[in-house]
Length: 182
Ligand code: XMP
Image (cartoon, rainbow, N blue to C red):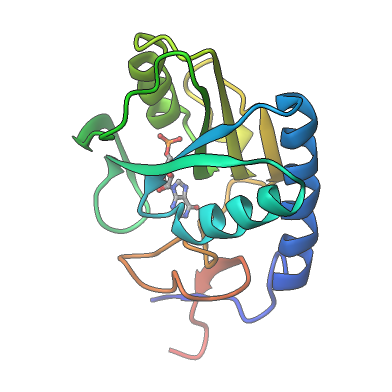
């Protein structure tokens, strides 16, 4: 049986500091432009809410926030590799500055599919931001424009990330480990 390791990989405080740094990098790149933020549900929900508030503190006006639902994982920790757009965004992104926000860049299949879809809609600026990057697992040639932390190939939970829909509420990020007491 797998359980979240009680010693976090990144504490809530460390994540918060990094989110502020990311907001600063993004605001500098935007150079005063208003921003449309699109989160990839469900894992992005905690990060997106922290990031839009940090961006606002940096003086970036958030034009709209929308969410897309894509799925590549079944239950547990295995990727299906087959990305489906289950719910598209409602807004028109043509000519806008668009930031796609995801929890973790893993194989890269999800972000690649979403970027293909969004670039066909002709935004003026299209960039990506993730909290975590598991580059060892990459299957397609893609990097996030803004990335919080690089991590080795471990399955992690917390800060919006789940294991079978559990542990999203943990304020820190931690690795799932075998329960040695079982
Ligand atoms: P790909 O492989 O398309 O996957 O880059 C991105 C999505 O896969 C999920 N994912 C994880 N979820 N812990 C999780 O809770 C992990 O370690 C993990 N690795 C990948 C996640 O939903 C991400 O958006």
